[in-house]
Amino acid sequence: MKDEVHQGKIKQYDPEKGFGFIGSAEGDIFFHISDFPAADGEPKRNERVKFVAVENGDKFKAVRIERVEDNSAKAKKSKVVTNNKSITSTLLSNLRK
Image (cartoon, rainbow, N blue to C red):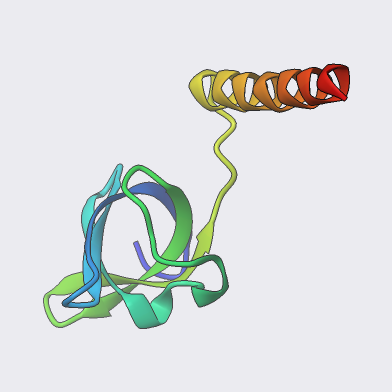
C-alpha cells in the first residue's frame, strides 16, 4: 500500500482535534491536518483527495495529501447550475439598470 498514490474522499474531519479519516478502496485511512494542503482551507466531507499511505505503527497514515477536482456527473451538474445562476444574476442586474 505504501509509496503508491491512492485516491479517496474525506470521510470525517474533527477541526478541534486536527485529524480525520479518508475513505478509500483499501479502507479508512487516518490523516492529520499538518499533512493536508492548508492554502485551500480545511478539509470538507466528501471532498476528493489523493495521497500516499505510510506505515504508522500497525496501521497506515495518509501523507502528501492533495485535493482532486471532482469530475463526477453530479459535480459537473452542480457546476453548471452554479454557472447558470451567476449568468442569470448578471443579466437581471444589467436589465434593471
